[in-house]
Every structure is written in structure tokens, then in C-alpha cells.
Image 1 (cartoon, rainbow, N blue to C red):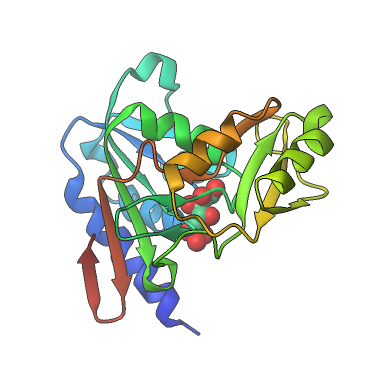
Image 2 (spheres, rainbow, N blue to C red):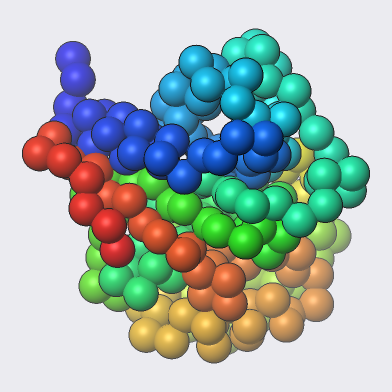
Length: 219
Ligand code: 5RP
């Protein structure tokens, strides 16, 4: 059964193809919305030089679609990055990392000129923080970082039995009402042992495409 969420994701993913230009290397994120983008990109693979991927899951899907996966170190700056999000506010600041790929996603976002974010309507919020903020941590620092996150007002929950592609662990931080996303991003990333906070405010999306069954709107 196709839900409104599914069709919103698909419409947003298809709309993102409008940002493709011939000869590009495209940054590709991770998640179910991006999977729909990769599936659509497969039909246009002859137009692009390849993709830089934010996760091994996306790399596998890209390769299966016949799209060459390139290393960011050899690709240089990217013109376009397409990725989903767990939440967006109307200023295109995001919470990301539900799929655990936040560090590579933040790196690709930083290295890209244009960041096009694709979401369905359920991801749009007035204030970020309803979705628990993923924080990637160096494993030996997990308990220390958790105590610091409590001091910041959050309730961290260890994502047990899970390791990121970088071999690190994730704390999902509940209960943060993020009125100042940039300040929270900086505060979390200043904790020793934190690799990446899943708040994307320093480098927000340039465009958010919000799909619902009636069409796509742009933030
Ligand atoms: C992965 C992410 C994803 O973009 C986010 O979790 C959204 O996923 P989906 O498109 O499946 O809803 O940040 O780390």
C-alpha cells in the first residue's frame, strides 16, 4: 500500500532531478527518500560522471544502478548534493542521521555548492527537536558525552547494536527543543568525543523540496 508519505517522498525525489547538469559528480545521501532518488537517477546515469556517496548502503545501491561511486578526495568540490532529512524547519535547518550516516552527510554537504534536501510533508516542523537528535561519538567517550548531553538538557539514548560506517556509536538525544539550532550544533560538537551532531544549521540546505500527494513545494 502506498501512503501519503511514500508518494510525497517520491515526488520530492523526482523533482530533485531538475538540479542535475550534464557531466556532474553528484553527492548522494542516505535513506528511503534518497533510495527513490537513486532509482530515478539510474535512468539518467549517462548524463553524470558519477556520484559521491554518504554511506555504504547508498554506494551499493548506486553501483547496482550502474552509477560509478567516486571518492570525495578525488572528486573535489561538488556542484550538487541531494539528501533527505528527519526534520526541517522553514529556514532549511535540519536534523539528520536517523539512518546513522550523519558524519559523511555533513562532510558532503560542506563540500557541495548546492544542497537540495528532499522530504515529505511530515518532516516539516516549526521548531527542530521533535525527532531525537543523533550524535555520533567515539565509542570510549559514549558515557562521558551522554553526561554532557544531559547537562545541555537532553536525554541521550544509546543506539545499541549499531555502529556507523566509521566504526563509531550513536546517541539519540530526546527532549531537546532547539530554538537556536546553530548554538546547539556548536555546543554538541564542542563536547570532546563527539564526532558529529545531527543538527545541520552551520551548513543548512539551500533548497528543501517538500513532497505531498498534491505536488512539491519549495522552502
Ligand atoms: C540518514 C539521514 C536521512 O536523510 C534521514 O534519516 C531521512 O531518511 P528517510 O528518507 O528514510 O526518511 O539523515 O542518516
